[in-house]
Length: 355
Image (cartoon, rainbow, N blue to C red):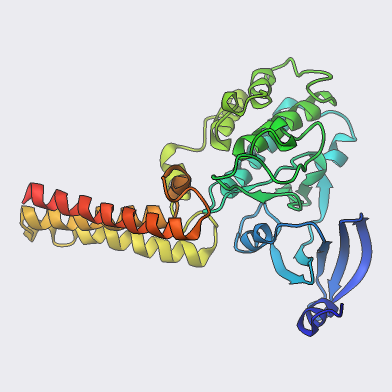
């Protein structure tokens, strides 16, 4: 079939320089844009999840390659993304096993990147964390690459529809036993830390130094016995390094607020103005307001915050609520309607109690 004219025109702007990797399902090329002369990575994929790349396109995070173009045509996906100049951890490890302190440093950065992905409205599970998919660029910044086998977590599914990942690094649930979630990536981080410090997979040689207990918890067969979140893992890594924990609960709360997660300045600005408005709604002229008037303002703010957290999926709350945790659009509409009414009723009850 002939390629769509618009697709053909967009792709013609990128001149092939060299093929990085090619298989029956994908082709990865280094290309140059003939307009701005910049170097990019072009991916041609026949087995893909377009929703993952669409989501990545909206993320502005220093640890994730910027996705510039996502083009689908006749069952083929073309992705244009940032070219990163640096070395993979596989290349760095080729020079010898790494010190535990250096591995802890890298692992903390990976946890920070995954926190962003796992806390999106539609959480992204990477599913292929390994040394060759982590780059340290020329400025020393850790980047997580290769989202070709990543997926959106769907709370109403019991298992993954495709068995993908790298043998040895992939969690047991990636082989069809359960659905992958954030704990699957945590399993892979555990394997990664073991490989970087010993040169071997945990089944062949276990780390027996200060990272031993952390790695052991990461690679438990049952997801329920692993760290629940990358934040929890990160805190243990920081304690293990002997450094003061940088992430306090207040910082985590702010970073996970709707509007702040993607890291896009426009989103952060809009969200900041919204939260400032909610605070000012309570405190402006508070000295001249009656008690019942103040309670009315607080009730309004609680209702608006509740709706913001609900629709913004704060801490992935939708996956825990009946009617919202599935992907049935009609059911979710009913759920949003019911929860919206309940939040408004709760705020009204507060107002009536204190008046």
